Image (tube, rainbow, N blue to C red):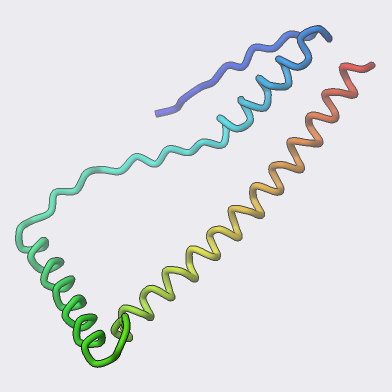
Length: 119
């Protein structure tokens, strides 16, 4: 499905602040992305396999903790966590770069609009 937003603005100087606010909101709303997902039914066999795998991971963590003083993770769990953290770092970097690019574009558009209204 598609979602539409209609931003109504006034061409008068008296409504400039409201127009800029409306355009700012419309720009932010335009970038919202919905990703619908189907709820998946999980069979009992699949759920049991997943739970058994989780129990095995927890047993490995427990053994690692018992062998040393402090909190320790099994090597597999540690590497998996490191991989997830690295992926999240890359995602954050990409999102920051995208946000900065959009901010620059938005600032340029606002400045162009202000110049047009001043003329």
